[in-house]
Length: 362
Image (cartoon, rainbow, N blue to C red; front, side):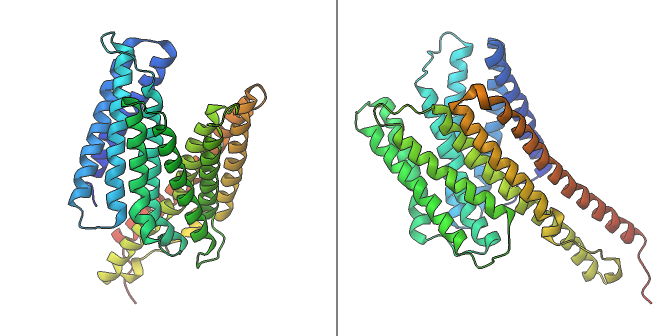
């Protein structure tokens, strides 16, 4: 699935997304209604363009892999998330819109579980077997987990329309079972992978799955009477423990892979044109971002997660250390990615030089 004019598309989506997110944050901090309107316009435009283009390209795709269908469902969840978010923002901006605070939890559920979780599961179905050299996920798992997660969210949403007492607990239980099943299946596949070389990405995936299991278990415990659980802890486990951990881990695999692929493809063009002497040495993927650098960032990420969880319980002691280490850890990730990008630019410049000044064969 190729998106036409990818640079133009990314700028069209990311610039209003960034400005809209900034406007929304300032609107909350300063309580300026005009900023809610600005945020609605920018974010609404960004999400609309992304959802329409991504859906169109997926529908046109010849692939019938389960990843395609799950991504389409995840995009539907993103549409619902964005719609609920725009309605809530409108309620803060204009008096005629009733402020339905009870929709906030539903908005978060569709965003974090419908969009983020299902998107990562869809990606995992391809990248785990591909990069970690594991067996494929079981066919029944691929066929039903995404459907059951979406059905659970529909059931939870129905509770807001028809408040039947047993409805929400039943669908929350189903959702928790799906989360644990995905996590345990992924951990089992990773444990039995065929390539046993140390891998930074593997550490991130394992931590993400453990965070998901903790999320499901603590979420179940929070429904018990007299069990006081800081609700922010669930958000930390979902956003930082699962989503950000997974994204960090995939960056250490996909970013070097793309660099290696582009340089290798340009070398192949030189070979096919008979200019073998003009080729450059393409570094191995594990050399583009060294394992040691990725492992250091993983350790910082793990300590940050622990501090964030402790900050949810004892904020007076752990909030500032967690915030500081979070900034350091993300700066370390940025440094690793920038070094890899610099390597790519250096190798590309070498290719340009040797192409313009080819060496005559002896």
